Image (cartoon, rainbow, N blue to C red; front, side):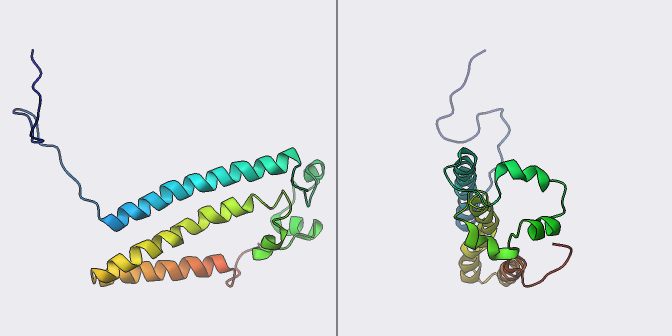
Length: 154
């Protein structure tokens, strides 16, 4: 049995034609943001956790004391440890136990940043439906992340 080399990028006789998929440039930019941004967030989490666990960064709540807080609800922990809620953690990034939240926040904001990549492309194409969806997504995610709406027990 001989193998036939295909030099014209077309299908070799007898082979089924392979489907092709065209991806819009803005979608590739969005995917790249999620890929590289996601890895950057994971790297940030690893480094900041290492800074915490090695003791290079001081802790707000000493690791040896964490066992007393494990069984508490989040609201109980915040009160017992005198930890700020919501975006108050930003003031605490000088402590090793709060520093990894930077990586978590970065991972959370990637989707919103991605929508800002998609928005101008959809506006340029005059794709009103996708433009509206993207604007609404940005608004809803930003509002949810802001902490303005407080629901539940947190």
